[in-house]
Amino acid sequence: MSEITTSYADLTTELTIPPDGILSRTIYTDPLIKVVLFGFSPGQELSEHTAAVPAIIQIISGTARLTLGTEAMVGNAGAWIHMPPHLPHSVLAETPLVFLLTLLRGEAA
Image 1 (spheres, rainbow, N blue to C red):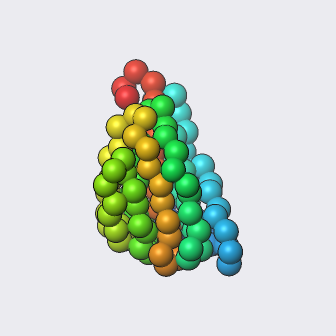
Image 2: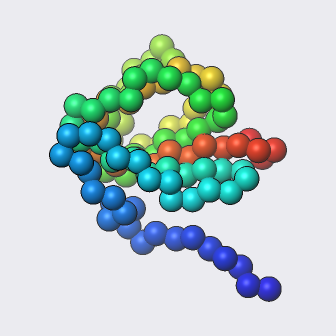
């Protein structure tokens, strides 16, 4: 039986950060997870919101100011953040920013 895989050698080459804006691209989806690659120009922000499912942010390049519930933190390349469902959070790009968002859904979540 053949197994189908999805792979990316370098996520930073999968999108071009817009000069003034935010770009998102779904790079994988199945019934259990959805993976979205984001590119932010400096100063761009996703204002406070929540997700109904657990989520993971992995910063690929750049620096972000993150608010997770009542905690604020700076995330640099290599940072990994798990968020439980319904946690209010926001993201502000301090530099050109690329991060991966993984939404965990379905029975495995």
